[in-house]
Image (cartoon, rainbow, N blue to C red; front, side, top):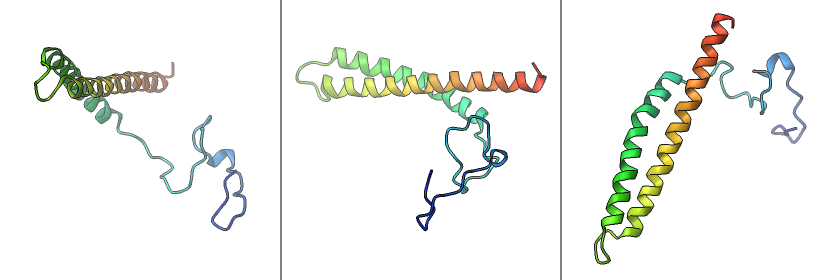
Length: 113
């Protein structure tokens, strides 16, 4: 249980005011009760940046493979850039998968299935 600003234990949040069932964390009281993420915008951004980061990963990897010992930039920094772009592409792909599943569940819930 968290302490309030005066060091006293904060009272438990009643179930009717705690937000979604199964909530991992208590609401702090500073965020809106109905705050929602714009899933369509997040999906659009994931769809736009996934191919961009995938292409950058491939480009930096090929450039690193073709760089010689005296080239600037060298193979090490190019490989690091390829890895960073690959991680960002993976994050965009995971976000798109999560958003697609969340939207699918939302549609099923609205249909009553």
